[in-house]
Amino acid sequence: MPRPVDAAPAAPSTAPDCSTVFRPGYDLNLKVTLMWVKTSQRRGGVGWWATETPEGPASVAFRAVGSEVLADAWGPGAEWAINGVPALLGGDDDPSEFRPLHPVVRDLVGRLGVPRLGATGRWFEAMATAAVYQRVVSADARTAVARMGRLHGAEVPGSGPLPLFPRPEAVLRVPDHGFHRAGVDRGRARVIRVAAKHVDRLEGLGELPAAEARQWLQRLPGVGPWTAARTTGAAAGDPDAVPVGDLHVPRLVTYALSGATDGDDDSMLELLEPYAGHRGRVVRLVKAAGIGPPRHHPAPTRFDISRI
Image (cartoon, rainbow, N blue to C red):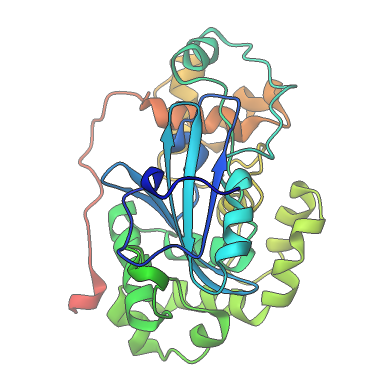
């Protein structure tokens, strides 16, 4: 949909290859919507998405102006990516059957709105970036994802600020020391290579119900329920994706829904049972609100393996 040039988001100096206006008809909360999408970030009030589309690389800038979202895209994959903006921002998500039964959940919906979950449709990127986040502090993982793009990814179209995560064929050419330079250890590198080797099957998972996609993912080496949930949560906007095995989420959810401070996966899953089909929606609300028990131990230590 064309729009005036002066309405464009703050963007690179080159003219965009495609532009659109998305009118969501609901309140946007990008912190919740894009929580598991690690190929998107906000920079200076503008949202950015860097992705390798089936038609080539693309960089997308978007921002809300009143009730509209203005988006520009650069690169060979610009048209594909611009057509994916509504899904990225939760436009394909249907929360109509979600019921905030618990008083805390009702309060969170009142404060944050009914969460709309974004979907990138890019399954390799979703699984590979989820693998980078396995067993490490989020800040270190975020740095490693960016380094993977800078060291091994394609040139960013339009000089956008986010690096492109490397294509599957590029991943398979990266030696162990190349992953190490990016801050990714051998265990996580193996999972990323598994994703690259199964890319054709991965990109077809969008044809399956999300629950079946999670089951299939867990047949792959190095992929458990945590990585599977993060993958379907990003690629498909899976509303029932629960990151079982997370260091923090079980304690946060258990505390929010019961007040207990010693939550684990079992207690979290029991408390989320009334929300079957939308458990991931509740997880995102709790995490976005920052509800949790008092901290009695130091925060996890950051550790950059690339410095070794």
